[in-house]
Amino acid sequence: MTNDAEQTNTVYIIGAGASHAVCGFPLLAGFLKDCRTDIEARANLHEYLERRFSGNGHDALDANLEDVLADLDNTLFGLGQVWYGSASHPERLRAQIIRSQLLEVIQKRLSVGDESEESSAELRGNYERVLGKLTGADTVITFNYDRSLDYCCGMRPLAYVMNPDINYLTPEELAAEDKPWLLHLHGSIDFLTCGNVECPNSWRILGRRKSSGTRICGTCGADMEIAIVPPSMTKSFQRYPLLSVLARIAKERLVTAKRIVIWGFSCPSTDHHVGWLLRSCRGGSPDSESLRRIDVIDPDAKTVLDRFKVLLAPGQTTECRSFGGHEEYVSKHLSDSPPHA
Image 1 (cartoon, one colour):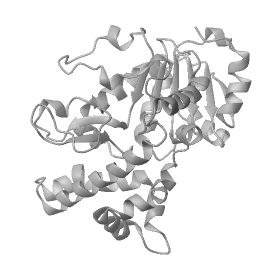
Image 2 (cartoon, one colour; image 1 turned 90 degrees about the vertical axis):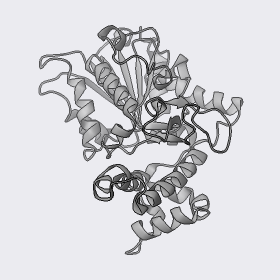
Image 3 (tube, helix red, strand yellow; image 1 turned 135 degrees about the vertical axis):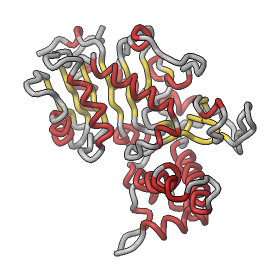
Image 4 (tube, one colour; image 1 turned 135 degrees about the horizontal axis):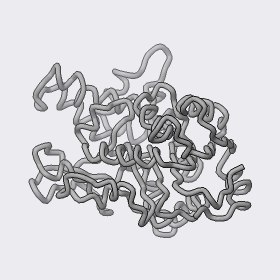
């Protein structure tokens, strides 16, 4: 058994199951049905979902949120961009309007519960029970769009502090351990970027201030838009290049991770982009033994663990532990273990 006091360089991988358990947010497969009233109030979005995702006895709102985002992004940034060309083409314009309406629904639903300082503190406290005392050597990777992890345990989303005037990061900066890093690899409802791809602010990600209505870029005057991407759309990362930078930093942290905690993320075998990234835990060389422990927190932890083990190097010796939920993890792991140094 590995002493927890020796566990440094911990990488936490947070999925939708964690925000469902802590915040009560719907899982991706049930997200649209949970937002039925708001979707039906948006005629273009509702008609699109009925046209593209209903049939054969299936309710259009049974569709997985990420499948819907990927469908729209294929029109805007994938094959639709090749076929239709100009952003002013009717098909792409229609997709942009529908996507904007969908983002409004997502932002509204994922903002529930953190409107007040008191409720925000309660959500942070639930996460901090699992994360424990983070050090600068630790990293939290989240694939969720909500902001409930932001500012937990002294973290701040790294996207907010990246300097757009610096065109490269040194190995020392990548390995910096002055504070824990929070990496929103698929974006966030609080990530705003300029919708004008020619504007310098289209590269930057700015934090959303608590206000309503249209937000206007202070550089070019175009509307600001939420920067989130579905995992299946690698092409979308070209639209939001800073997310690619965050993914690279995640890769560097996974290479040196001594412990990985997977909470509420199913490690789906069909998500090849994430699988490619997580294989970094094999280490920097074929004989690397840096990864000592994997903890999985999930109602179906054994299945998740089996999927993750496939990503390990042959013969890689790593202690694996399963927990059915975060309460079990807190009681069986954190209560008996000193904070990792």
